[in-house]
Length: 324
Image (cartoon, rainbow, N blue to C red; front, top):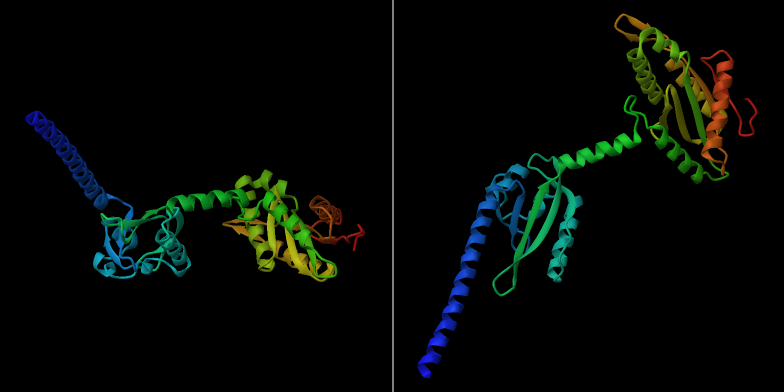
């Protein structure tokens, strides 16, 4: 009886030892896999002490940040972060200290040459076998390519690809926002509607590449003539809309329009080709509470009056619809 019990106890012990051995083997294998992955990872993997001093870093970190390992060991992890992103890291650390799990976040880190890279960050707690906090680790992935691509997509959604001006949707959105901000009494919002004279003749005679050159040149010239807080947008085809906030009179809008008209009339040279192009411009002021469509329609009417007046001219139209 005692022998049978002893055998059963021994078998139970053996099962426990086998299970423990299996766990240890699995842990060693996991550790070996981790040891293989960390050095070869393109991600930056940094461990640090509880006070934020860098303890270890993998080759991915030195490649990403451009520092030698010796330059970083023992230094505060903040040295790889611009001031604008340090608080986000500190917030993650604080959440860990309170027993929480910080969420991943996107930010920028600093390279050794002072340039910034866009990174996705994960911050983790480092604990000993008793569960005590002994430091932190951060894993940073370079997402610069993705961020640049996203910015390009956002730009394509807002800007005209040929001229670099804001596109129709964006200029109308800015006009609507400006109309909502108008207050009386106070400065006015001036609007200029510009159209290239005889643009079809340029395309028909010289081809669309010449037409593109004319449009891009005129777009640049219009931008040269306005102030930093003004907006020039391409409405489509050969039409441009200019928003002039902070004006005091319709005459002030007409003065800016006249400056644009004179600059646009200068010859455009392309090798042996010389293009003589002009703009017809309608000028008006916004009325508080009116819609963007009403505003642009009035400026458009003024522009067509400039066409009827012989082109290459500026026509003013007051808010009530009378020509000035």
